[in-house]
Structure formats: C-alpha cells, structure tokens
Length: 363
Image (tube, rainbow, N blue to C red; front, side, top):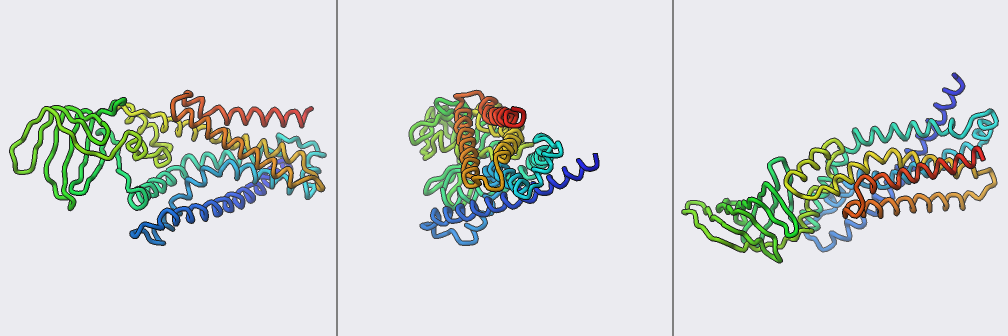
C-alpha cells in the first residue's frame, strides 16, 4: 500500500508538472496571436491604445484556456508517459504488475481535481474577465449596441446622431421580434433626459421599430397619443442576440438563473443551456484525453517513431475539437437537443479511448 501511494504521488507530480508547462506554453502562444489580431483590428481606431489592447488580450486569457484545455491534457499526458517510458520507469512498473489503469489513476485524479477547481473558481473569474473583454470590444472595436437581461426584463441601448434610447420590455416574442410592453427613455447626445415613450408593443422591422398605441411623455410637456409610430433603429434580431451577455461571460453558478430569466421573458435559451451542459461534460472530455494519451504511450519505446506518434496525437485532438464544435453548433441552433449536443462527443471519446486501451491491455 505504501509503495503504491509513493508511486501514485510520483506519477501525479510528474503529470502536474508537465500539465502546467504545456498549458502555460499553449496559453502564451495563443495570447501572442490574440494580441496580434487585436492590434490588426484596432489599426484604424484612433481611440485605442497599446495599453488597451494589452488589457483586452489579458482579459481574453481565461477563454483561451477553456479552448485549449483538452489539448493541454492530451499533450501533457503523452509527454508524461513518454518520459516515464524513455527512462524505463513505466516499463519497470508494468513488469512489477502495475496495470495501465493503475498508473492512469493519478493523472485522472489530477485532471478531475483541476476540473472541479476550474468550474468552482476559475470559471467565475474567467466570466468576469470575458465580460470586461466583451465590453471593451463592443465599445472600441465593434461599436455595437449593448443589452442587459435581469429579473426585471430586457434593457437595450441604441443611439443615432442626435439622441440616445434606453429600451425596456417585460416580455419578448420572436418571428418577428416583438417587445411587450415597449418603453423607451430618450436622452440627447449629452445624456440629458428628454422624455419617455410608452407603447403597447414594439415590433422590429427592417430599419425601425413599428410601435402601436403609443404615448409621448416629453419632459415639461403634456402627453401626446398616436395609434402607430416608427422609431428608426439599426438593430436586427441577430445583432440583439449577439449583444446579449454571451454564455462565456456568465459563471457556471449563475447560468441556471440567467437561463430562467431568458425563459421568463421569451428569449431562446439554447446557447446558454448548451454552455451549462458543456461545462458539466468537460471533465468527461478531459478524462477521455488522458485515456487517449495512455493509448499513445503504450505504443512508445525508446527508439520508436516519436514524431509520428505526436502527429497522430495532435490529429486526434484536433479531430475531437472540430467534431465537438460542430455538434455543439447543431445544439446552439436547436437542430439537436442541447444535452445530446453537449455530451455526445465527450462520452463517445471516453468510450472509444477505453475500448482501445482495453484491447491493447487485455487483448
């Protein structure tokens, strides 16, 4: 028992070391590419500075880590097992009767522990960073409208050359997009309050809000009534969806509340439900990457084709990443059920890796 505990600690320490190195290296590489892309996008923006672009790149790091995490687990597992094989440590352990499942246990334990820390601590911090990144991106690079969703309904900001509008609705229906009731607070370009528009509903058409049964309550003036009115806008339904709080700007713990708020006012919650299920299924996908790393490590020897094995591992990681994104896109567009879209590839990868490992280990 003591020998097994010593071996497990050693394997866990080796895996943690290489996992930290690989994750840090991949994060640094992607950080440089993100910084270069933001510099390119900001080239024609006179109000963006080097410090702002650097800050946005730092805010983007948590989202980057979430994307590259399966690759970090796969490559760190392959490197750990390759180093142990090259030094004959794994060969001796297997000769002493240690099975593949036993030397995989420490790596799996570290992976599951990191997944728990990621969901409970890193994900909420990353959601805050992602939210700040989106705010800066919308303000300085996209010039996009902003939208807020709370328990009190939907709040949407839009502007034109002379005025700014704060639009509120308690309920939303789609096809066409209809806000009920339709309430607009009107401000001038200096944010001075001008008045309020109250209407029964507002329907988004091509370039305007088609407003019905409307009252104009201008500051220090008597209310005016009209049966219908057209309020110009540059918004579209796609822009409104894109400007809504993206799923990766909401922490794992807050996603259920936000999904409930979406359902309450009538907006489709598929993207946020998918994000929640994907976070739940992430440990399964990461464990599958550990098993795939073991599959490749069992084929290694001191004079083996290391380059070919690394290329095969990279190809596998990329294939799983692409398939997972494709299936999740089907879920986001409600072509597939959200639960199926989030869990299909992680569970398939886990079962496939276990089947291959069983075949190689037990014949």
